[in-house]
Amino acid sequence: MYEYIAGTLTELNPAEAIVEAGGIGYQILISVNTYGEIESRLGSGVKLYLYHLLREDDEALYGFASRDERAMFTLLISVNGVGCGTARMMLSSLSLDELQNAIIGQDVRKIKSIKGIGTKTAERIILELKDKIVKGAGSASSVVASSNAARDEAFNALILLGFAKPNVEKALEMVLKDNPTISLENLIKNSLKIL
Image 1 (tube, rainbow, N blue to C red):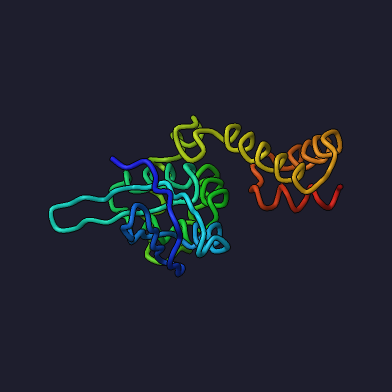
Image 2: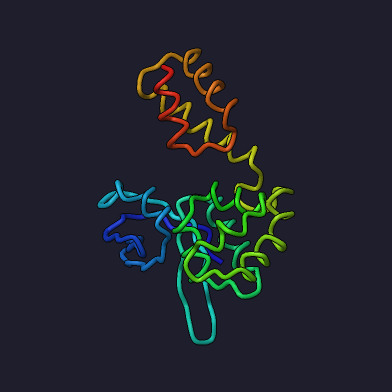
C-alpha cells in the first residue's frame, strides 16, 4: 500500500524511527542495519521504504534504508513460522549480504545463530528462499542489480570528493572484481584505499 516515506527524521533509536511528513510523526520500526544507514541523518531529511503490516489486532509500519532490505524482509515473512519480529531480528543480526549468502550457501549454523531461530526454521528458510534469491526474486532483485546500484552510488560519491572519473572507474573495477556483492560503504572505503 505504501512505497516509501520521505520527511524529517526527528527521533531515532536502533529499533524505531520517527519521521515527520506533512505535519504528522510516523513511528516506523526498523532493523539495526537501517539504523546504521540513517543515524547520521537525525534532524534532517530521510527516505525509508515501507512495509505496512495490517492485521485485525495489529498495525505497524516497518521501514528500510533500501529496497533490497525490504525485499529480503518480505521474502523472510513469506516463510511459514517467520513473523515480522523474527524477520527484523534476522536483518538486525546479519548484514543483507551475510544473510543472503547464508541462505544461498545453505549455512544452517549461521542462520540458527540468530536469536529466536531454531534448526527447523533455519532449514525451512533455506529450503523456501534459496531458489528465489538465486533467481533474483529476492533481495536486490539480483546480485548484479545490487552491485550496479552500489557502483553508481560509489562512483558519484567519489567524484563529489574530487577524484578524476578515469581513476574512480579503475578503482571501482578493481574492488568489484574481487567482491561483486560488496556493500556500498565498503566499496567506497576500499576504493579510497586505491585512490
